[in-house]
Image (tube, rainbow, N blue to C red; front, side):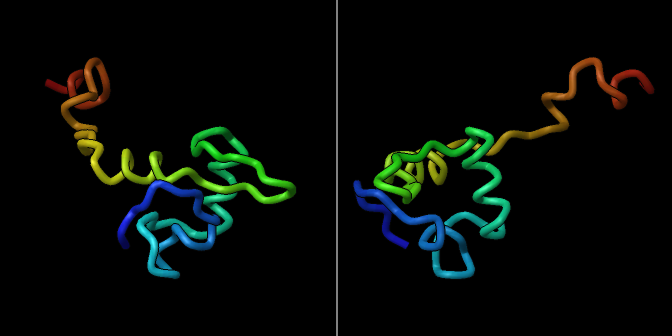
Length: 77
């Protein structure tokens, strides 16, 4: 999927429909409603901006083991 600088419907961005977000449509709407995914409201439609999708695919993955300071793994050492 080529990300353009436009607004995308939630159905367009899930991988089931050729998009880049690998979650279900209901999980996507839950993330939108929780404020985890920014949207622009046009009428009754919630649309995802292209800049967010570009940021999502260029973001460096977080290594949860390295960021687990003071967690269970460190206590057992």
